[in-house]
Length: 209
Image 1 (tube, rainbow, N blue to C red):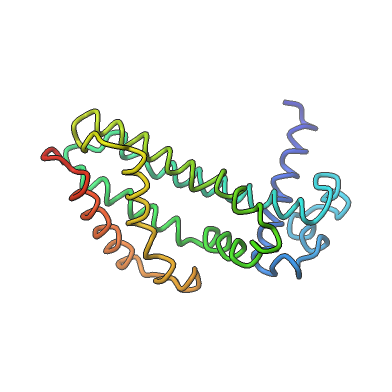
Image 2: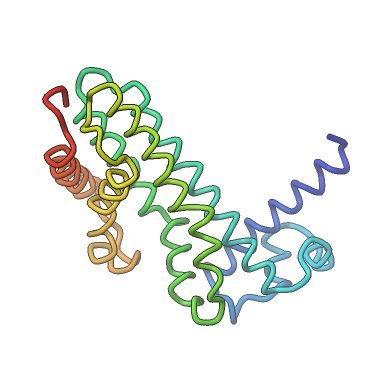
């Protein structure tokens, strides 16, 4: 990769990061490209060189944020690759990490932008889902399938098991966090993780679990 190409990629990433920060702070309507350029540390024409208009920038900024969030959440599943003897404890560790990631500032900002702009940008839900929740479910299903093959979980439907695990975990969050506006203490997140895992193991566990 040439220095010029590397520099262009770095500027694009800075623009997308700056754009997400400004959109999250100001909302789409109030955000201006000049402010985004200042946040990204580039000139305003540079923003337009990478993105044709504000709407395109908004879509790409949300997609980039969703992909970064996805990478962090998929990494949180890694302990399931070698859970050791105490599968329940490993599931609780993974569940707690996912809850922390789901309630961090970036994740909450992304959800608020989805809620506020979905009527103006109906396609952003599909953009974010393709780069986030759907792929997380598939990654989790793969981990659960391997555990089922090892006799640690019931070998039924890993995709359904993954959906139910995430539903048990994330379902109560919107109400508890008041749509991402209330920060939850870590002790509450750990309790939620334990309750979700308990229900999941009762439904999908084996004697080995």
